[in-house]
Image (cartoon, rainbow, N blue to C red; front, side):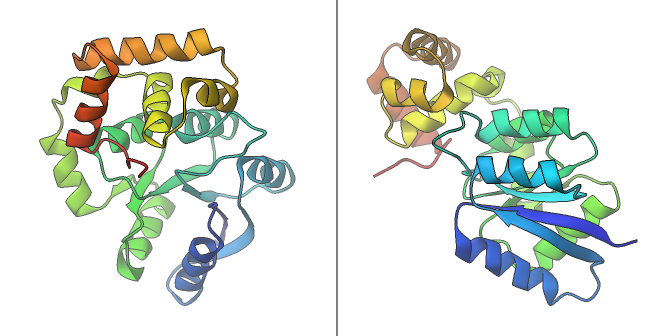
Length: 215
């Protein structure tokens, strides 16, 4: 049976590149029913189509929509339980992989994945399995006792946006939360990570490479 697939990523070159890689693989029984470059466009597409697989860029966002990152994954898996969500991300941090899988993602791929890895991931998901690249799986187990594994989805998203250079005001607008709530998420994350101030937080995030740091 041919399964329908959607690709959602903010970068056109990634969407078209992934699509070309899959189209050139005759062993995969997949058909494309659309692509999206923002959360808003993705949600509109899902309202029209019923895809089986979604390849979702982790950095996908929309200025008019507060959902992104882990919050978006949880929303999608809750509202579209039959949809198999595969994550594509520049991030290879074990914590992010673990949280994405816990949120309902069925696969995690890095942007360095080649045709062989992409094919293996898609076939695994088609067969009803969960897929993580071998190198990332090794890191996942090695980091299994990381101190910060208790961070909530909101706390994680706040830290990720901080690493991208956004102020608390910017984050509150992006996530449609009050500045007080965003600040509370940050403070709780700092407490769980065992840091006492913003300087220590930034140093820890840079040292552990939990997220891509905006330069």
